[in-house]
Image 1 (cartoon, rainbow, N blue to C red):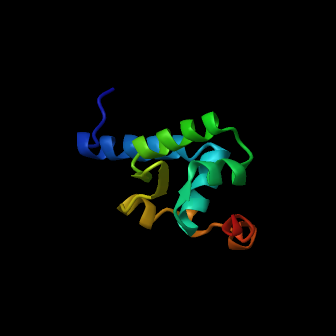
Image 2: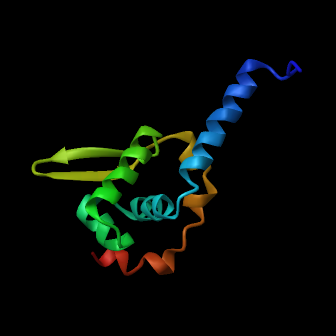
Length: 108
């Protein structure tokens, strides 16, 4: 059956669905919460979420590819931060992060 919704609407729906697939991982949500508080290095993120450097880097690559996070190299350190885009401005996952839980992470 041919859909009656436009191709543009279908593409927007696919874009949103891909965002939710990215956010469907607990560690990536934790990383976004941490980055919403302040810029962090891979070491800081790995320590805060209790993951290996390899796992953390894997999740950061996915977030970067999805345009949710960005990085900046300050030799020899790679620093990650939230991307500036409309999706994140309206993202309830980031806006409703549990600030009291992240207090300890901000001390790192």
